[in-house]
Length: 104
Image (cartoon, rainbow, N blue to C red):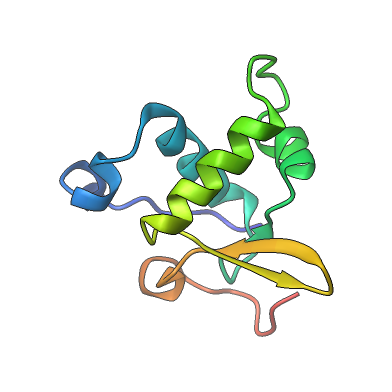
């Protein structure tokens, strides 16, 4: 995973500023988690281990709900491949430099 950029426009973004604190935390923590194409597993069990490994109060159910809310607001896109849940950030390439030539 490469270095990630968060632009200063995050402060005034309407879509970001309507997120709850937990939705925002999840959304931000997902940024360094994803591959170079802005994609990652949406399995709450996996996300709990990788994104919130030291947050004992965070549950898989709270992650699943927050992901659904982020998808409803258009902040992420949820999809499945062979029955496994994944997510991606829309417009990832507009905000991040893609260094690898091919997505995993």
